[in-house]
Image 1 (cartoon, one colour):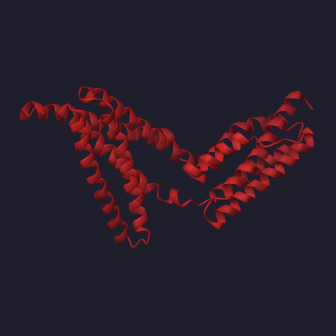
Image 2 (tube, rainbow, N blue to C red):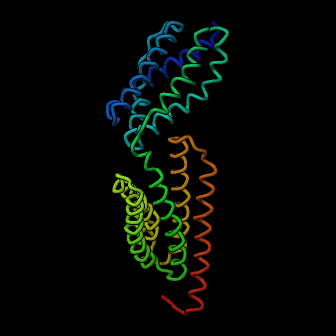
Image 3 (tube, rainbow, N blue to C red):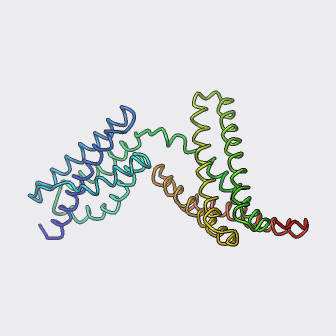
Length: 289
């Protein structure tokens, strides 16, 4: 066996061991019996792969505690579906390494097939409650981004006072949060859904968190720094959209770029138009705050 092949085997052996511990760690707190069973089956398969590679390397390895802790922490904060799929996405890079092993390790073809097919099917069986309400979260966050970004941009030039802008945005944002939540609740009820309260809660929380993040720059700058607050607010908008788009692209297997560009163009476009409206309103109404 070549040194390169042995190095690849050792790397894969370590990864399989780590992932078996990660799956078992996540299974301890994952909700739902079926989810736990899927995660434990994945852990068993990774452990079996570890022993196959061990037969070739002749080495006993220890789990890498930091890597295991990292993914378990991500699972607790962002959900186990996101953590598991993020970890498995990293294995796609390793597929090229399997090609190198085919001539020297016959069992590598079997492991590769299992990684690509069986484990993929098992991952699709994971059913996390939060992901079923992604539509509600998108509704709340997207509406907050479009409405509040435009409003704050308009307020920025019309008022030119960070405290007044923050106060106006907060009143508008909280009112809109309750309005959006109520609308989602009534919509879900009219469809005969039994999860109307959960659905409106996800919508409301997503809206409120977005409101707080967008208003924060206006609380951090003094009254004269309203332009800098606007710039920071727009940067925050892009970061929120990028973060959420990445989360959805990993957790639900959707493409990142189209969603990110669509939401960014809409939010920034509305902000530019509203900023222009603020300039015109201040000029023609003759109001000086």
